[in-house]
Length: 300
Image (cartoon, rainbow, N blue to C red; front, side, top):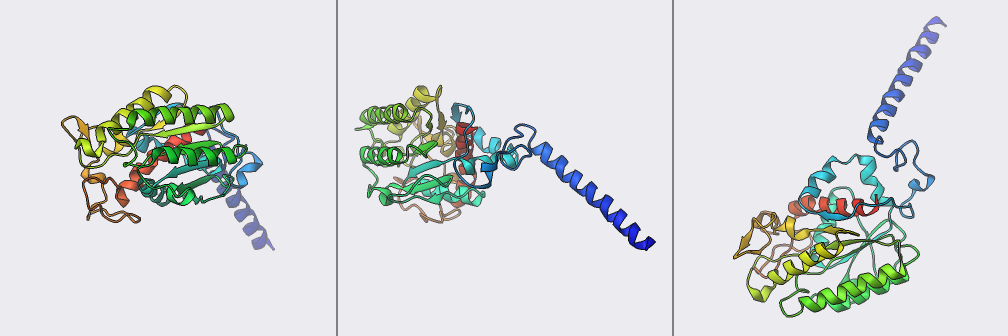
């Protein structure tokens, strides 16, 4: 009997101490926001994805520094983005980013024609959602607007990304005009909708035919136009290592970030032309952290 009482007392005390240590760890992780999902004061809605209210957000540009900023976030803070209804529409480079996000533990659920943005992070490609191929930026804008409008009572964060074939020397001014009208229309329709703008991806070639200079102009315009109200994911800064990879002052995607034989893409393999700009698997895992940080800043 004495032995039994001793064991109950010993394991009871040990269990209390163990729980205390777990509580201490949780408190440390949740010190910035005790209401974050997984924290002691988290709302009941944290148990499922989507439909969790957003915070005030933090507008501005997220570039290279966004990778380290994401790494420094507590897990409880990172997990908050899983509960925000986000739509990310893109094409092939976006697939590379999605694969990278998945490898970091933040997969985007597939979004197809007629789907709803009610499951947290949703991602889709324009060719699936609207039958839109690369090189047709205006139709991509139309398809995104239609899907955002259909989900206006659900969607919280909109992430639109052009493909590298969408922005060229002969159309970049019209692209800016159409994109601004698209954003203004969605903002008027849904005043609480948050935006993550993505600077158009670069290719390796810097010839005028491939349009990197035009893409840079649109990227700079995005930052000048929206940085005071929205988040801009500066993909160009990361792909080019902030201009370290350039030719005649025209930025290009760095070899270390491309899907080469040493780092092929799971989805897009290896680029066969300098006029392409897909992202390697390892590079995508790193670069996607800045995308996730952009979504976090939009909703926190």
